[in-house]
Length: 585
Image (cartoon, rainbow, N blue to C red; front, side, top):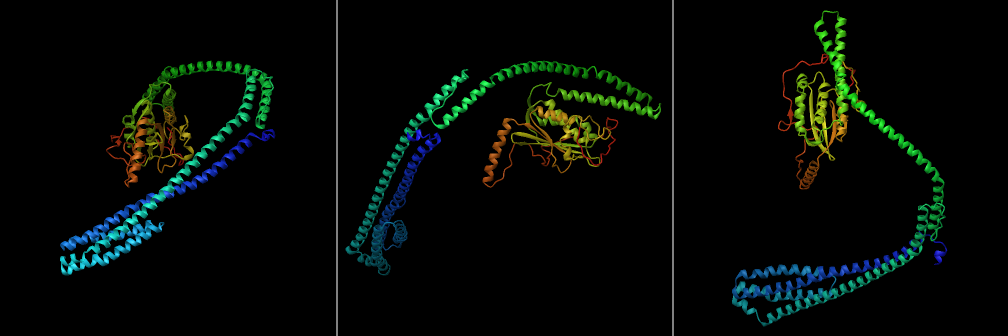
């Protein structure tokens, strides 16, 4: 009570109470630990010393009886095989005596009894057993029987009595140890009961103290705060109890006054927000109209704009075929420029339409076997592969969820890109592979072409970005932008592997099916188990890792065919770029 009047903080009061309880519990814990250690020591003595001592003493008696019986039987029959129990008994006796001596190191009475048994056994063996065996071997069984008298039997009975005394000593030690176990166990139970009483008393005191110094002041503060929350912002809040609560009440009251001052500003802000919302709604409506206009533009671009463009291209081509060589060289050049410009405009419009349709015109996601897709890709790029004398291979591909036409378009763009940017003096080779990484399929398209410098790795995925002139490499510069949009539409990401030793390696990820993820986890667990047994195992059922060698059994290859003339008029004009590498579509 005095501490409360002096204004002890809540933390100080709780720490003081917990400190007292902690000291008591630590003292009890130390006492319990000491008693428990002593109890464990006594239990170990019962289980590991006195118990085995009793068993070995009984076994010692049995071994001595076997020796006595073996000697008497040999004296009667004279059969050497009757001595085997005696000889085995002597060896077993020595082992038992050594073991009993080790276990009884803490029990001097047991060791003294064991010494008596050992001395009497040695005397019986020297005075009776060995002479009988020697006499039978020298003079026969009758002479040996004459040595076995009532005195020898009484001598062995003395050994038996000494062994019984040894067993009694062991039993006495065992009972004393068991009594100590019971005593320490009872002491341990009493200490646990005391600890439980201390915890219970501390809990009761804690509850009463918390009710007085915490719950009641807090309930009063909550009641006042609730009045303010109900709208009475002019209600003054006063605190009671520990200094923390009084300071908290002052802070809440300052907050109340600040809220009251800012309430008008909040109302004004609400009005401004409503005005902004109305403007946003108007902008949303304007955006909807703009999207409709864009759709209309796409329709016009795909129909109305292409019709006159096709007419221009057709008539320019007619002029080129009919009047080629009849006009001067400059006229032929102008006509060629017009034909090339019309064709490039058609390709550009078609590529823009394809780019805009990605994700807008959808057929829905289904399970797509990329092995089948690679077969379609090989068919669609057959002409380009044959013209460039290129080789397309792929490893085992997974099944994913996606749109098959878009995935086919994605891989066609990558393969065509690799063939286009080949080195003129090296046969082009393109390899597509897949591997499972962190729940995603990482698919790689690797070629041995001219490659790309690391500083241009991000630029190539931007629409209309080119690092070459159109005369050096044909194209609109939109192929890899389409690749990026398709990959992101399927929830993946695409990048250029700048660590590739040769050519270009473009990697992209696609979400894996749950079944593939579970199968990979099971294979990894099985591989870990095999590694623990010393056997290295390769996870089965997963596509070949990127960079692995190809095998005719699981790798598709584009068949060779006759070389065909490349359709673009400028396709055979391979310019240079000053050593710069590029894989732009």
